[in-house]
Image 1 (cartoon, rainbow, N blue to C red):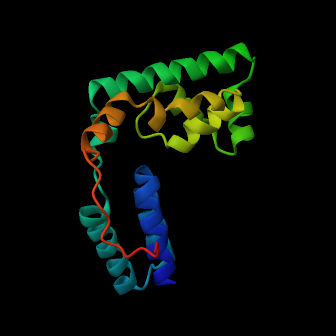
Image 2: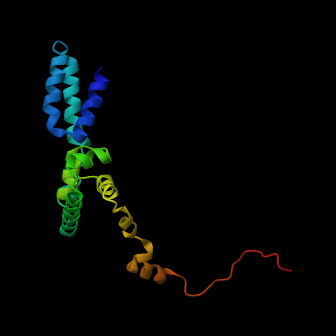
Image 3: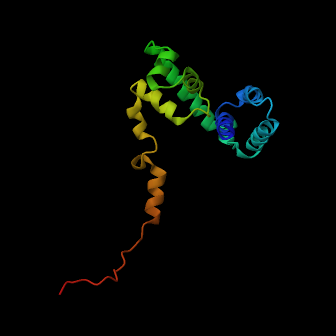
Length: 164
């Protein structure tokens, strides 16, 4: 029972930090007489919050260019949805998520997963344009760097050949 409660706390810390207080109340109700179990779970929660929750600066303070691109993408996704006369709820059901991630994507929030953005592009039949993103054949700088690294002259192979 304690391990199950601890895994619940771990999952909760990762995805829904605002619900931690409610979980602690539930634990207190489940273990009213067993103070050791409650103390153990609360110490695990404290440790998890201090050491296990990673801080991703990209989601909290992205570079301006990234933030601006996400905002424009979100605005474009919103325009595509409205032109198709779809509600956020309908789109969310189609891609298999809740309305909150769809709304977050339309706002251009950096914490929204790339799968949500790609699923929205798929929903609006705009996914084929994603093929050009980071296409190595269209990467002029990368192609120039690759040419600079190519050998200038061919070297003889030291392999034995069987040409007699």
